[in-house]
Image 1 (tube, rainbow, N blue to C red):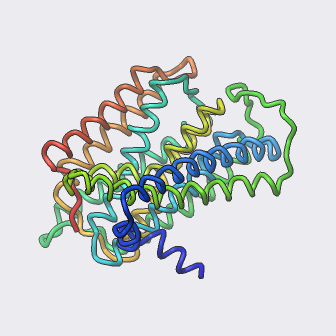
Image 2 (image 1 turned 45 degrees about the vertical axis):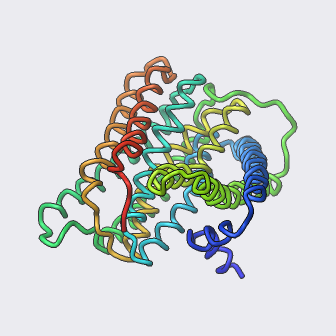
Length: 354
């Protein structure tokens, strides 16, 4: 039963078959229900995180970078491993890299433009370096493969195993940082004087909210893509936008809920942690399942876009001595993402092929 649920979550073909035979009015109704479920699930998850932080004494940003980011990257991991196993390495690799670009450019950039986002140096001077380091390692290994492999660059299984080992090390050191974080001053986090809820209910809100977000996101995107197809939107445009948007929808809804509930630090932790996991977990698991051939457009398009977002993000952390990100910094990140998206629309240069 559980394996069948995972199969429906991970297999794009099954989801598209499910929506193709439905009338348009039914698809619109499904989308409306999914949007309500997304919003409600994200609210539950944020409430659970806030109360769990109060119960455990851990900063909310630390929980966002661990529990929440691990949960919101699970769909990408399932999709990428399934894509690699079915012989579509471009989709598997593009899912991980595209999610890093969308999480930091679209989500973090947009939130930075709309509200004040705190710079929590405890998490950003630790997990932030892992975020940039993991992405840089991926690019360096890919460039070496491009230089030495005559048959074309491939991320071999040993690369996937290496990334998963590094993931284990990251999870261990994150646990150590979390214990340190329990003693960290929470001056940057908004105080909450509401009545605390039981630990079991905290976890129920987090897990239940995460389940609602993942399931509704996985159903919403194929339904929206099918409606777009019926209205004559080209297939390549749907692929370049809906897929990229869909993989980051859980993180986006979590960010919106965090800002609405006035806890932007959860969004910061989720985005940074999700970037690390998209590289080490999503791409690592996919490469370990089956070697991933690296399409040429990753070297000319996807990797440069990822670097143009992550390295300035690292510089912005260093620059912001007053403890907050600036709106123009969010504009840069969002602008790079927008150019990345427009180029896919205009020239189809980033469309991922197997």
